[in-house]
Length: 138
Ligand code: SF4
Ligand code: SF4
Image (cartoon, rainbow, N blue to C red; front, top):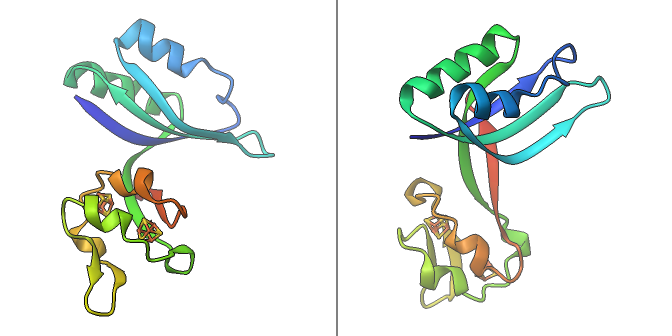
């Protein structure tokens, strides 16, 4: 199974090799999607973890026991209207009808509740008017 998570590391454990330990001790394959450390030496990482369900839950318990805050990740697609040049490229490939061309006005509209976060529009948009934002499920 795969799970996308936000991991927050307090300054006291930020240098511990968590990703190495997940691979060696828990058979978990991590894919780091985003990582940063703030000036107070606290770290935040967005990861996708792949493993058996049991290994994955043991790995999460291990990180929590070391003081890491583990939050579920939700990804959301955001349409930045002011950057959109109304070219329509995204509306052709959007499989869910979330991005559509309104006729006869020929203007693009985005309905977030229809979006299945397939990310096809991110690759299709020449104006970077569509963004994926990561939200932690706090
Ligand atoms: S992520 Fe997929 S479903 Fe959502 S708006 Fe983009 S193309 Fe449509
Ligand atoms: S591909 Fe980008 S610029 Fe073109 S209509 Fe879609 S959001 Fe707008």
